[in-house]
Length: 436
Image 1 (cartoon, rainbow, N blue to C red):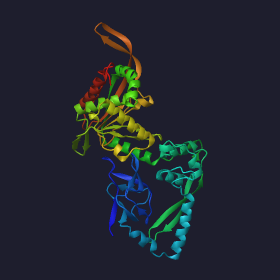
Image 2: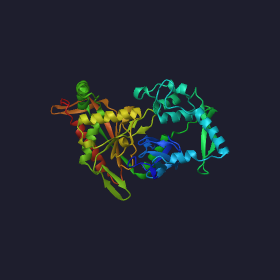
Image 3: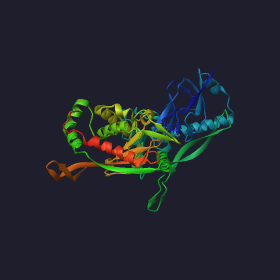
Image 4: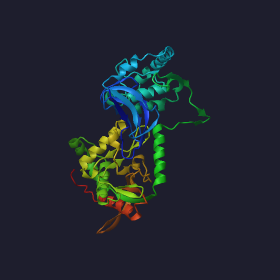
């Protein structure tokens, strides 16, 4: 027999730890190769950790809600399948057996099965949330799913809870203690009972979500770490607007993709980063790390209101069609909650679209350990002075603001300003009569 240590995998360059949200397997369970054994969450994405071996789970080293560092051992699997028999055949004291039976009955009363009586599938994460919130199978079956084949996703369930809070009762845990046979450690199992929402007069007390707390910490850390300074520039994107209006139907028919402004802007940013490599850096203490690849982070809003930053790898090597496919794919996966850890790691520079919410410009917070971030403002029709060889006149133009936040410890005002000036020049040089 040999024992295999399950370690918390690396989930991104800036991710040093993760929270264990729930164990999908118990001690003594058989584990298949590539079978998910635990659900974890970072400030960027939720994911499952699969087993690299086949065997029996003999030890769990961290409870749910524990924060674990990348590379730490979280569980032990005994390979060759020999451990299961020894655990199951070990004689239990009568008192322990009675408590075990009682607790198993409690667990069975709140468990949400993988499939409902009608055959509808529910993921481990959805089942776990439903159990914690006291949602029955009957209620779960009636929630409209937006996932593949109509499956209920985590965001579907969270939206249901948010919209139905006034008519629902929040589950409060009652603790039942279950001694383990192998050690003196006490494992706590919960059963849900009804308790009202806490409200103070006209004010409602809302607990921050786990992801909300992590994002809050990440933002505060960035503000306390980097010397933020901003530069702003106005860009005339009239040619781009006219070009897109002319080609969007043909683009969709030929490429099967909707063309938006975002891939055009991302391509311009990637080009400028290639020309200004000292923006595409990270700072590690007193050392500057000059990135070899240009990997563009694209901030995207999730259905629950939180933000996530999927990454377009080697963005400077993509043409407009390739960039469009990457933007659309990652945005779709973000909306559906299907981003993988690989989709959100390795970013070297971030772009966020504040114009999507109607903002003219903004002052975004740097996504550590990067040193700069660009905000795209809303495209607006405005009166403008147009210079021609025949003289100046007033006309209607489509314009937008670019807002560039950068770390003044390593990026001075000249470099920060020249960088967005280069993006402006690239966008304003767009040929509205060009093909795609």
